Image (cartoon, rainbow, N blue to C red; front, side, top):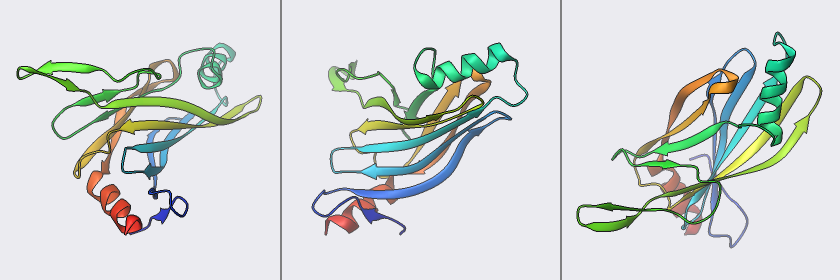
Length: 171
């Protein structure tokens, strides 16, 4: 397994993913790694946009989406039981009433990190906190960004691989 301890005593591990989620002529979105802890995990996402071939207004809209003044890409996770965790931008997780009881929904929040902004290229990272740790089965990581021409698309990540890497570094 290609993982490593985040830092000694952290109780966490980093699982490299290095997979493209969406790609157009001007946009590339990829999952670079999953930082897992017993409480949940950060999904590290890389987003790159370039202006080449776009009208000025189109480029400005995309660039604004990655620098905080317009709609950025939207992310979600769909588990095998069809539970959908959508980003909530911080705050408290939500509850859902099903089968006669209230159930805490998985929480998914996004923090935009470093950005390199040039006149014709923007490269940025987002850390997406997913709570609780995903079940030990495949789940989908989804992205959409209609204003940049990215239709809803996703990749499958392996919850069992993430859990196994976490167990390996915790022992």
